Image 1 (cartoon, helix red, strand yellow):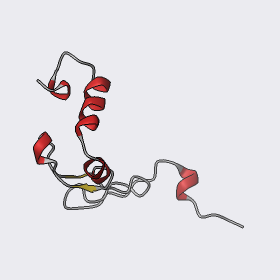
Image 2 (cartoon, helix red, strand yellow):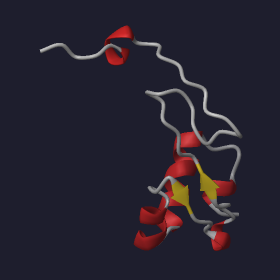
Image 3 (cartoon, one colour):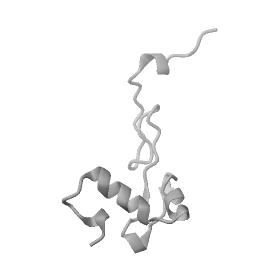
Image 4 (cartoon, one colour):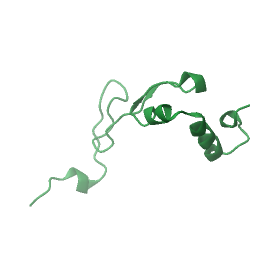
Length: 78
């Protein structure tokens, strides 16, 4: 059994083992917001993009605009 599949190991150990199994190209591809699948390792394609500063976008049909930090939401006055 590959270490990244071994549930008795910590999440850190499993993540390190999984990355060690990847080629440089595969690892780099996972840094994109629209990461492609790495089928040989059982990693599905996924899209994790959103705009946290403006609320959440592309997490469904609508965009919810939130402004949790007043400083970030206010206009800069110079």
